[in-house]
Image (tube, rainbow, N blue to C red; front, side, top):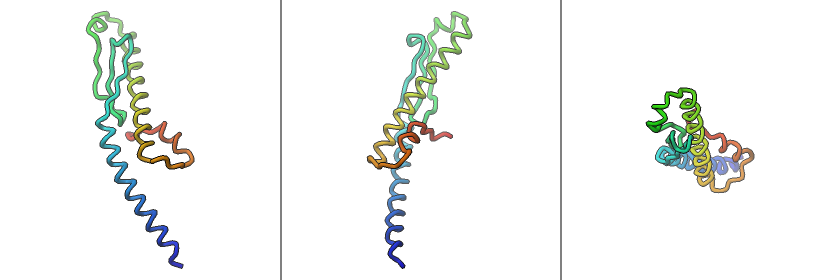
Length: 117
């Protein structure tokens, strides 16, 4: 009757350890930085591993060109590149935490990981 309680206690301990690891990972992801660029580096965007935009740099000559549509397109492209790199970096870090656990659907979930949603 009480045989299953030992398994439950073990699972709870593992869950608690995983929660601690996840907090450590969130802290680590906040410190990681990824850069996306567009227009030959005329626009750069920096994001962290939590997919938060940290900064945008726009070359002065691009600002002086007055081409609003091109600037908007380059900012969008650089932002998407930075966020793609941040997602990839976060997925790699998460894979290290799971330590090779073979959980169905985990790879797909990690590829869509977004701690801000």
